[in-house]
Length: 293
Image 1: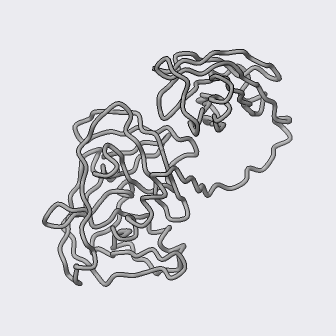
Image 2 (image 1 turned 45 degrees about the vertical axis):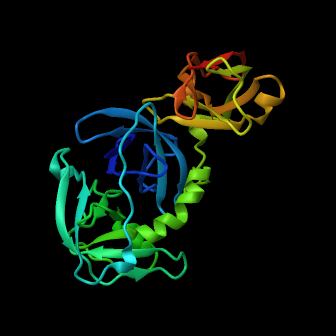
Image 3 (image 1 turned 90 degrees about the vertical axis):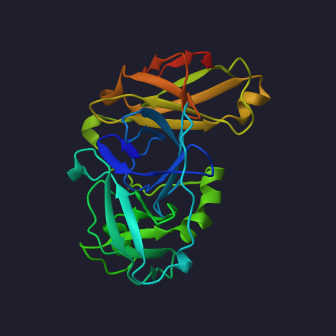
């Protein structure tokens, strides 16, 4: 499975639980929750990041509008040094094709600070392979590939000739939080640029209906400013207020007006786009009723 976020393409695996969700590494993904999921057969779907933890380098992505078969997890503690696996992924060098490499396990390594456990395999890491699984002879996933720089950043010595799997036992400890929607993003604070002037805003308010109904408490409403030149901007608000006031919402979209003036704005709930769109209008208050399929 390919995971495409902006100009970045990495690998991922569809898990059995939760069904039709893709697990991959998070640090390569952009800040927005919307990605593209592409199967080996070329089928393309929207993917929605339901949970991510950049400190542990994991993201759980819901495949929107599709049912995909998943892979189960194997017991890594039953492995021995020299155990054979198949490392899977879509490295850029394979021109978009799935690459399966026979690999053997070296001694497991653990980061004491985070508790993450890694399984080194004797095959080289390839760009684009990050997030791809390695499976045992029973077809069970033993872990997913991590970027060597991430592993090195934890203080573990790395080698260019080794793939480092985040072990399935470490992943299974983190999955419940990802399912619940935890978001821990490691992003540098942008440096203000006086040449662009101060940020401005557009406020949106109106009603929200999903399938003709008011969305439940806890639903998150997202706005996406679509800009090909400077990158998309995502903002969100908790929509408990939507339910308390019969589906009314209020959302402020901030941006640098000189860069984003007039760009389209889309609205999303759980990866589904609203039927209505708008645009960034500096300092304006816009009344817009939103309906979702």
